[in-house]
Length: 108
Image (cartoon, rainbow, N blue to C red; front, top):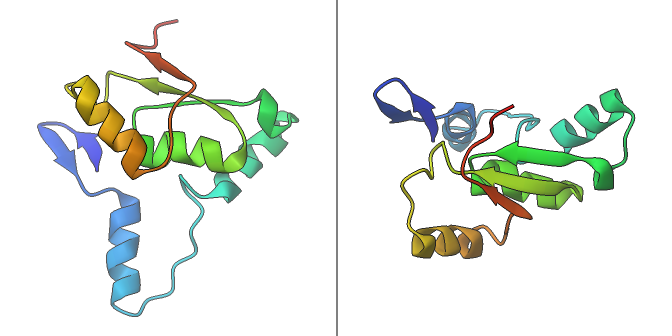
């Protein structure tokens, strides 16, 4: 799910899953798939261990970083903003992914 004005909605990945379920062919390149992280690291000229992936989704951002071999930071201003500590732990377990850092917000 992704944030939209007034709540959440299906993201492109869910739409692709539905298309695939109907027999369509999908090439997966977005998060959490490794190809998108590898492409970004190549563009920046850095190895995975020098990458910090920042995002609000355990399923996409944190799991993707882990699968690529990068560090991760979960920002608590997005889809998990209202999650309790127990709900966060459940999400980490469900997706077998735990962030290296948890940030209340990202401000620069």
